[in-house]
Amino acid sequence: MILPTDPDNKKTYVRDKFSSISGKYDLLNSLLSFRMDSYWRWRTVRMLKGSPAGWVLDLCAGTMPLSRALVRGLSGRRVMAVDFCFDMLRAGIGGRAGVLPDNIVPVCGDGEKIPAATASFHGVTVAFGVRNLGRTMDGLREMHRVLKPGGRLLILEFSRPTAPVIKQVYNFYLNRVLPKVAGLVSGDRDAYEYLASSIAAFYEPAELMRMMEDAGFSGVKRVPLTFGVVSVYVGEKR
Ligand SMILES: C[S@@+](CC[C@H](N)C(=O)[O-])C[C@H]1O[C@@H](n2cnc3c(N)ncnc32)[C@H](O)[C@@H]1O
Image (cartoon, rainbow, N blue to C red; front, side, top):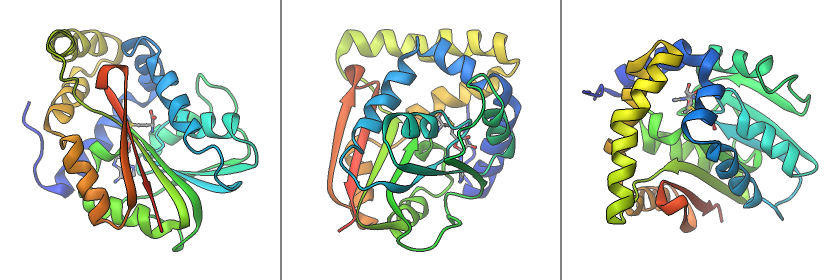
């Protein structure tokens, strides 16, 4: 599949795709990841333990599974959940996960122009969202801007396993099995071909970490999970 190269075309494409699968997103996520997605989010939330209570920004929040995991796993947190796809937020308000806790505030907005004042949040999280941004550097600079000094950024994102056998099994699953199953369940096979193509086209871990540093983050590190199928990238604002 050929991905849109123009950033604005990519944003329109991404918003439309998530809108079309919004009602099935949570079900497909847990089905296609064999429920590993909840574990990956849980590991991400744990990395914010010890940060001060208060506001956290969950960017590209979608149906807000990470926002829910944040308020469940950490006490005294309020989450601003930002996504530019209204249908994803709406699906997350009354969806499979039940009533939205009142310490999560959904906001429809663009991650490349975050609708929040400078130095507003103790933490910023982004799960499976950075890959979908039209302009990655703009998004990273915005995440840095809205963090308070001492605040932490956590990016949970797909990476590509490198161990020979695991890599082959993973690629077969991602490119052959997943789009078929997801297409049958969601009615939009194209959306899941986009998933495989966007993972293949995404930055190498070292490159993403360099971009985080260029955006102003310090102490940047990567924690690979599940043979490197996903990674959590951590950065601090000094
Ligand atoms: C794969 S979903 C991830 C949802 C959720 N974070 C999770 O853990 O499942 C990616 C989300 O990023 C959102 N997104 C992509 N680009 C965005 C942007 N520029 N601003 C805000 N949201 C964006 C999409 O609308 C979509 O809901």
